[in-house]
Image (cartoon, one colour):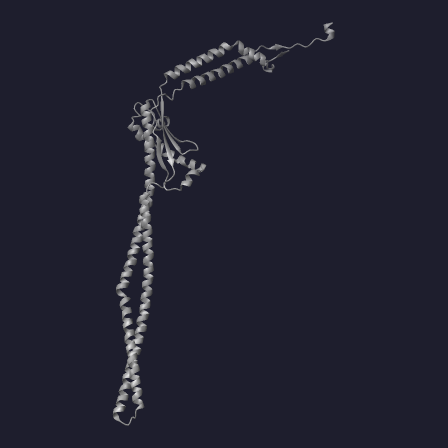
Length: 370
């Protein structure tokens, strides 16, 4: 009876012995891979990576206690500042400034993806700008330029936002100033057409005059009473009594007229005073509103550009002395590992499919042996 190689049981000792006897294959593969990796690494052009660092500080004027209570969500939101450094417009200006496209046929987007990397360090407020080029000096200059322009773009964006707020405050100041001028004009018109001081003076004069009239009225009434008590047999007494009564009646009429004038003028004075108080209250409200928006406008202009996070370069980067690629040690390690795995895999397949079929015979019984 024959059993196919696929049905044979796996013997690990035989497998290890098989690999041991063919170690030259593994050695040759690994040596060749290491040699090839060294040659390719030496032939590849050297690339240097320069890195500039930017710190993202909290908005100016914020509570100092908030700087110590930074949440993970807030740190994650700072990744939006990567958009400034990764701006295609900014990289296009940098490519023109440093002549990055000379001898480069690839699109600008591909060049940017290969040369520039802007990323925020995880769980920190640090933004790193890395530039990878064949010239170390140009790489450092490019990283520093992108970092400086990122800070500038962020500052300009913050200024633009605050300028919008200042423009709104300026419109509010103009509107408040117009309302204040209207209230002041209404106050001046009321003071000119409805004077209070002169009317009060007229009332005081009428009160004094009525007091004198009342005194004269009392005197006339007393005189008429005296003449009335005297004998009326003579014409002189009757004439004096009649004259005193007429004078008392005239003074009483004058007193009533003055009283009515005082009442009318007092009502007018009360109405004017009420209107003046209302306008004065409205004028005070508009004055305070104008002062409030004017102070807000001055504050917005003084603090323009400080309401958003502030970006500041903490490390412009140095000119790299060692190339970042090709990494010969890494390439050799990868090639050695790959060659080892591939050679063992190939020998394993050779071991499985190269085994001979094994014949199995039935065991002899006692009778057959005898």
